[in-house]
Length: 111
Length: 112
Image 1 (cartoon, each protein chain N blue to C red):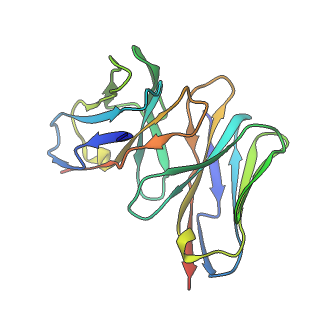
Image 2: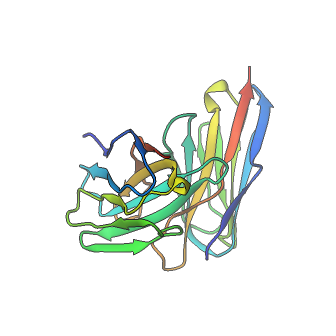
């Protein structure tokens, strides 16, 4: 079945440093979504990418969808302590309606 | 709007007991899903529904049943609880699956 992996599993940065998490799917995706989960909270939807090679920005966050629609990345510029949490990618493969989540990347930011 | 409401927030069950986790949304979303979250394993899809009367299995459906008699409600039934079902359960909904999912605040279930 469809599998979605993320690397790294954990990243510890100093406040002000950049951060990137990578998402790789075993199958071609129709779209990719990104979520953020704060410690003890629930996942919150950030953005959806649909087109091959698409790049979207939200303030300091840059999201990219690969040309083959099998990978994606999230880059945070100049991290802040408010960026702490686990970032998940999630994708739907082919004609399925199943939204499969990646394994997540836990970001810790030291002030 | 309340969004996605899950009850209860916490539950302790004995092995072999059954129970139903409730999920309701007031956004008229067609798509609803149940996920479980275990440490280091991300969110795994249990069951999902694309509309009233339609349900399908996710990645880890064994031991769980669902039904979707109305657009608003999507209960998850544990038939005979096992310690391996100790987890945090999230319900989520989306408008036709075309946009992001809105998650409930979760139910933390412990099976002893």
